[in-house]
Length: 373
Image (cartoon, rainbow, N blue to C red):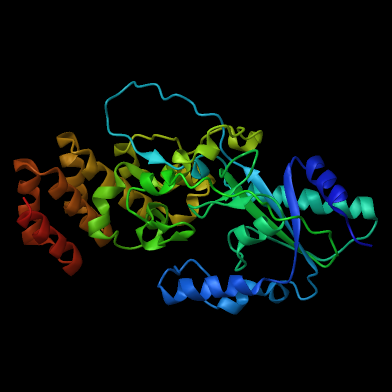
């Protein structure tokens, strides 16, 4: 027995999901062409499935898949003003990474939807829940399911919550009535492209992830040197293109209690994060969607933000890292941050590091930072 749109939306509403739809398993030829173009232009990241055919083949994930349910969950809680009790440097965290890990929320609500449908149809069925880790193109599926339209900044924009939603897919071996793709489009204001700090939005619907600060804050290893000044005080993610979007101005706040409390503050103090223990990380950042990336990558971002602060008070904490931290990646970025701040104090510590740094990449960063003083 198939499930119609009314039944699906009713099940979603019972699970607290107001934006839900379904798409069939046939992927349009145009999608493969888009993916091939991205690959040819070098816009595929290591985070993505490299096999393009796997990205259009739901049957490889659930062999008897017949339909794909898509849900959109809003994560943007009402903004809270930050009490300014100190002038110490602060960072900035993207909205999606502040509260409880949205992957867990998506999976819990998706399981609830499956239980509701199974109970009401008296017919258990096979399913698979995916969120972010799916090789399938979730935004394309959400568009085809009628949940929203894809904006010029490559985000899915819903009529109720704007683009501040996360997507989940449920592959099922049951026929479900498909949604109607939205006929809405962006208004060609180009505000998202103008707001992007790095020019990552190269044209409508085209983003270069290697210029995107959201991607770069998550990518491991050395942060590209030419991009570090553009990071500003961001330490995880970037919301600039979404904040600039007029279609987000009247969005509804998330009603989900799971997103009401920020385990990772919106504007955390930066210096304490340099000394964060593993346990402290696990009880704060580790509970959010930023937790998967690990403490070292986050501290790398914090160090860059401290360098961009230009605050001479952070020279000594950065110097301690440069002298004593066992991780070459941290020493390398500490050298850059000291060079970015400049001044006689920073130069003193860089000169010391020139004589004792043994890692080739970190030593090169020390030399470059001294040359630029």
